[in-house]
Image (tube, helix red, strand yellow):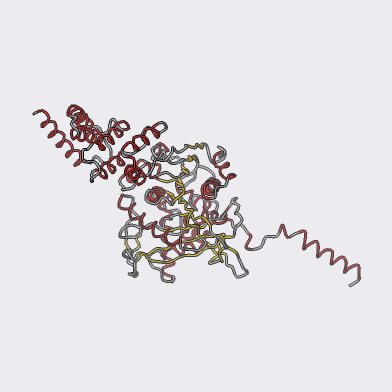
Length: 532
């Protein structure tokens, strides 16, 4: 080779080396088709599955959504498959997962053994069945599933975790990570550990939309959160939860008894429905004062969904984003899947893949704002543009949270009932009902034991309750009772009659038919005695 040719070759080599790498993307840097226009954060994403048992509870069989049972061989305990996405560092041995991997986990929800051909086919059949139940109407076939199986994910199996601790996002799923994996990968790429778990029923794998079902789901969440917080790459001081459909209400029910939860997302969830609010009110810890962390409520047109149904959650700052062309399950993987299998869960109203992407970005800003105190994310969140898939956005600022029952009890032991009265007056300036009816009931019962022998504290307590809830049959009933105990007979008679009238119209959840009958009988007895 001549010296000129050698120089030319060397120059071209340098040109290739230094000019083109920015345009060359390695296999690990490729953004998979499934992600559409979503752009990852600064982290690669690892994925692992924890197969574990809640040994305190019995094993359950698999059940489909129609109630058919499939017996399990597991006997060790309640089967808990926990899927984890996390910030990772890759090596030349890192293996990018196909979507097939997530599908296979469907068949390992209640039976942790390695898959054989028959069980893999069962998992596929269940995904097809559930997809058709969500709107596919029988149009989603095995051939269409094969199209999805081959798609690449943006996660690498058992990749080495990045050093450090990251906030935790808990995202329950409907049967396997195949339902919401894309959003989970996206969150993890932005510096979060994401845990997904199937919330099961009391006696089978399908959850129950009832008070008992919610209580069971809460136990599952508690177990899964506890296990995930044991991981060394999880910051156990920063936890957020996100739920679609009825899991949005289940995560809020969990928050009412675990104040370590810092924020929640209702992703087109039933939290905004009157039906699920009735269920929540039946759970023992549900109280507006207990729901006091920020909520992002992403919702779409649905006859049962209305932000007014969470208006009472006044201690939570609520961000309300309406997506007019989306539907409940297009916020799961079905939104992006529309690009590969058109009409996968029915004909969409608009560009649901774009709506999904905008929803994922909005959630990420919410997480960063409230878990990382990121000011830029907070600015983007509060100034969310009403364009594209979003036609309305509103922020409802939460009210100051009243002191806890524990702190008020402590203050009573030092300062007496006057402290509660002063606290009430201060809070009342911004909050017409600073304490719930259940608060007054619990405080009343606490005072009854050696703290109020002459009933004067409880009478003063219920004067506050009456100021907030003048049309409550329960409150008037106790005002009458404590007025009588403190020698105020005329006042007692007045509120006994008022309570009797209100029992005809008061539909408060604590007033069951038997409770109303009991109160009527007691009031009539009181009035008869006062007339003698």
